[in-house]
Amino acid sequence: MKQILLFSLLFLGNLMSAQKKYDQFYINNKNDTIKCEIINFSNKRVNVIANGAKMRLSPKLIKSFSSYTSNGYRTFTILKNDLNNFYEANIIGKISFYKVYTSNGYNGILPVMVKNDKIVYLNVLNPRNRIAELISDCPSLLKDWNETENYKTSDKEKIVNAYNRDCE
Image (cartoon, rainbow, N blue to C red; front, side, top):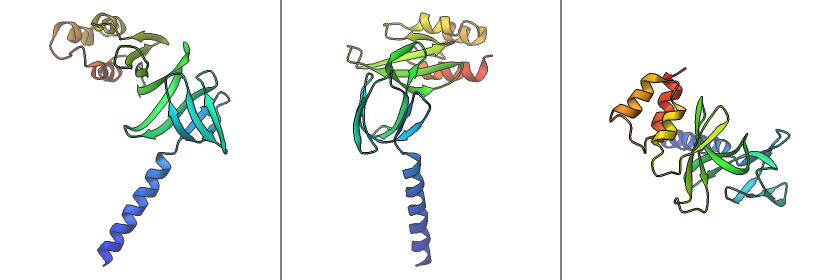
């Protein structure tokens, strides 16, 4: 009986902490965090209910929003040089990796890397040259990228993590 009670308390505690972790919110241009319910979103708009009011928010009106979806907890943000789209933040570092969801022919998901506020879209058939340019200041990683089988073109997140970890 004590084991069942202990298990129930642990489960309830985890459930309550998960609820807090996965609150939905957006951050406005004044850096205020606004709790809300996110109804749906695209790269151009997010529809929310905040303080009892339904609102359509664009990238020019807010800096970011975070939501728990069927794909897990996700954060979408604007980029300094593009105030027209929300980008899903996947890796933040010296080189950052994002995805933007569009209605183009590239499955609607466009991978993006950012270094020194320069946005590099990787929607071309072979993004190897664009990635090589981004990592060119790290000779050992560039050599691995160009001359070995360690990295496939599809290893975008793997190369970003290696750069952020191993390069200065």
